[in-house]
Amino acid sequence: MKLEALFTVVDNKLIKISDNSPYPIGKLKIFEIKWSQIELEAESYNEEYLAQLREDLKKLDDANEFALLVPQVDKSLSSPEDIELFINAYNHCARRIKDCVSVTGYALPAELLKGGLDPDSAARTFIDTVNIKHSQYVYFAKEEDVNNLNLKEKLQDSAIIIY
Image (cartoon, rainbow, N blue to C red; front, top):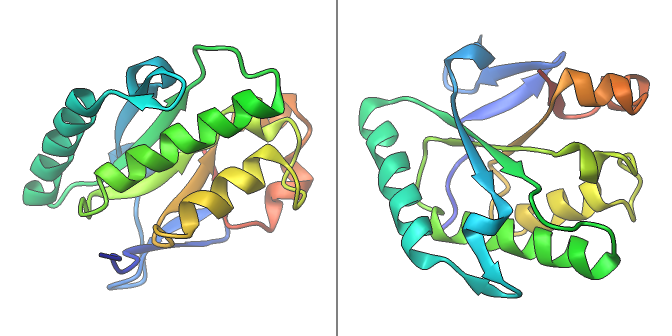
């Protein structure tokens, strides 16, 4: 089940497709999701937590409100294997909430962004992996992370919203 995109990005603004109006980032409900809450151990997922997350997001669906999922890196992300596990965990999360229209997308953690958005970067791999089944998602990056990583110029013309 693929959902239609409700939002797009124009000039670093979140735009509601239905009426082409800006949607304030501040109106998004923030769901900070720790990696350890999703993945209890390598490739073993916390389905109870994900079911509760889905319930919470479905309540936003009913209220016509929207959410931003903010991954929290709380385990080692120092090897290619760790990065793959991280990406797979949040991709699994996206599969479990696939019918939640309230989800605008994911924020990209600094740990993924530090490699920029080159084709083989962790951030690009995250986006490309999730987009296979969830192309409706928009991606976000914290302004502080963008500035600390000197990525403002690289992200300026991208479809990633700096918030």
